[in-house]
Image (cartoon, rainbow, N blue to C red; front, side, top):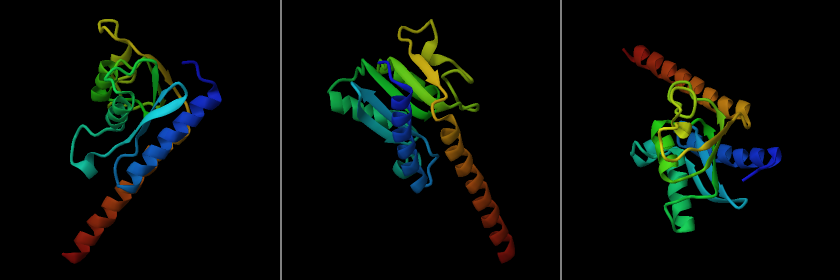
Length: 167
């Protein structure tokens, strides 16, 4: 599963396209694709608000679709591309699905479990370890998150002002 830089950027751009779907639904914009033999076999984006389910993270959705595509819970010989570093739950799901390689765009300093806060994917105490690469389209992956949270804060300020004006 050796990808060229161009291939990595292409697959990360596909994960960014998934993140855009989250934006359209006012979800935190994280996107993910799973690749096997050069083909995308699973796609996902955050859908917690839309589906009213706490576990509907981009990685979980992509893993579910990939499982259905290959007809197996084991996702051997695959690579997961995700815009933001996986959280603890998603890192656990990646390990349980036996995904051998993860490529993420930007770090997640508040919830990251692939190097920032925790290092679940490479923990030697676990029976499945994952090769991790970071920084692919990092600026774009970080920017979509920063823009989302900036716009959310601005929207909240506007709503707060409107409420005060009504009083």
